[in-house]
Image (cartoon, rainbow, N blue to C red; front, side, top):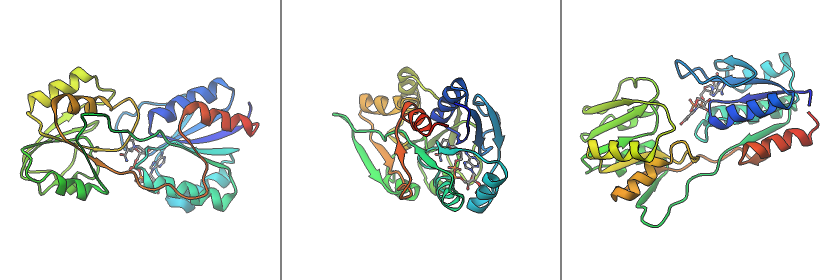
Length: 245
Ligand code: NAP
């Protein structure tokens, strides 16, 4: 393959796809938002920073022609996913959405679904120790909580934060032993997570099940209509191949 592909990244899948496409001979440009101070860099070329909305991305695509765009951003990166759909529509560049499946409950799970971080903050009222694994953005939704909150994020979170916050700086993947130890050490009695899906951060759900701790899950936002969706890196690679890129 000899074409050029823009991969909208910031996920493990995006990095794996970039490696696979580079190995296939594709000229890959990965785009990162620039949120993380020291990001794990994908293979191929990398650009960092926002495009300036859908119009900015469309402009970028006109100035830097590519054969296709793969939106491999996180399931909750709604602004970027919407921009990609609009910019692809405006420029006629083929767009694929690569999105890993969400998590499924297993016997023994006590999962409580909510539609938003604000809904999650309401759902944890009355608990004593809340393990917040929703990332450092959006923590303001939990700022009014009186409970002890354990916040885990890659870079230090910024205020506003819950009054009694313990910060754990760490980057996944996390092992089951690590998660069990964390729940035990802080006497966590409820876990809050987005339905990110994937194996990198699933151990917290297993740990919660084993300890009988409920989990509040934020539902995924809907995907833009009219954009083909695949669930795996291999399928995305196949889609690129099928277009003879
Ligand atoms: P978002 O709300 O959809 O993005 C906000 C703005 O950040 C976008 O409008 C865009 O700015 C810029 N942006 C986002 N992803 C970009 C990318 N890959 N390349 C260039 N610009 C990007 O996204 P977010 O939730 O803040 O996530 C930011 C990044 O972190 C994404 O790459 C995502 O894959 C990754 N991530 C997010 C989560 C999460 O829970 N949301 C978790 C893990 C990783 P412009 O409008 O200026 O183009």
